[in-house]
Every structure is written in structure tokens, then in C-alpha cells.
Image 1 (cartoon, rainbow, N blue to C red):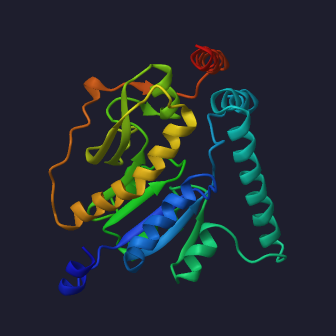
Image 2 (tube, helix red, strand yellow):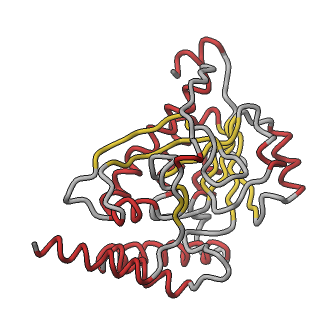
Length: 275
């Protein structure tokens, strides 16, 4: 792939929009940057994180649900990682520490960095048009509208932790286990204005074992995700358009688990361990 690009002197112009999340997302994004650094024309760090949920939903209830779903060890571990990351970012803003997170990583590679609160920001959209990206990779909590989606020559890609069209929506590894599905994986698909509804460029599958839990599925998904995204970029770069259908007639939709659903899952996990 790299040799092909050097010989033809053609570079796919890639722009990334991502939240700055130290638990999983940043490792995924930096893996893509490392593999395609010569092609990255910019990185936008978007407002929001994994705790960004609907305005009418309780963050406290969501935290309790995550505690029940993850278990004590992983919940505390992820909370500590996130808290330390946020403290370091605040200290960096005060000038006590160097710039931290995705911004620092990108700037060290001389990749332009933007900070955005909304994907509708006119100034940002104008700067994005000037960069003329072929592909945008979106890993933010922002809902992207037509005005932005029309900018890249090829399209905008998203990594989704499920086998679309099943399990559109949030926290998909939980729902795979909650519904006792036997197979899951990662889908790299085009972003449209309809949630998780764009054509699938690459899909990687694996079987769910009886020993799997939420944390193990998340780990497996993020091991697969960089490889899947890079394969999708390679496919688009070659002009291949044999996409998988993402048929809404077969879609299932998930939202943030309720406390009752999270508790039911935890009880089921305990029974499985004790049996």
C-alpha cells in the first residue's frame, strides 16, 4: 500500500474529527495517524466525551449503569485514567505542563489542530473546505449534517462496535451480551444524517464466547478497529466500491441502558460465574 502511493505520488487527504478520550479512542486515532501520517491534513478535537448523553438523561444514573456493566475493577480503572487525563489537560492550559492528549500528538507531527464545539461552525467548515479532504474519519459525539458531509470527495467514515445493521446506537458491546448474541465485531461505514445507516465499507466479525464480558468485547473491538479502518482507507484509495448494504429493514436500535437493564445484566453475569 505504502509503495503504491509512493510510486503513483498520489496521497489520500484524510481529516480526522475526534473526541479526546484517553480510555480507548485516542489509541485508535493515534494508530491511524501513525499508519497514514503523510496523508493526515488535519485533526479537529470536538467538544464532548463518553459521558455526553441526552440532555434529559441523568449522568448519575448512567455512571451507576456503567459501574454495574463494567464491574468494580474496570470502572475504577477507567475513572482514574479519565480523571488523571483531565487534570493534566487543565494543568497544560495553565502552562504548568506541556500540551497533552491528541493535540500534542498531532502537533508533534506538524498536523494542524482545530478545536470545535459544533460541526456547524461556519469558520471551521470553511477551513475544512480549504483543506479539500478526500475522506473524513469521525470519532466524535457530534451529529454531522449535510453541510459537512458534502465536503469530503469520497465520504466520511465511522467505526462502529457492532455488526451493522444490527445494534445501531450506543454501548453496543453491552447490548450484544444483554441480548445473548453469538457473533459481533466492528463495522467501518459511511456517515449519513441517519444514525449508523451508511453503507458498510469493511466489516470484521468474531464469535462471542461464554467467557466474554463487556470489557473483553470492548478490548477485542479496539484491537480490530485500527486494522479495519486502515483496510477501509486502502479500499477507498483503490477506488473499490463493493460496499456491504446497511439495510434499515433489518436494523435494531439501542440507546443508553437503564439502571434496570444494567442491574439485570449484572445479576445474569453473577449467576453465570457462580454456575
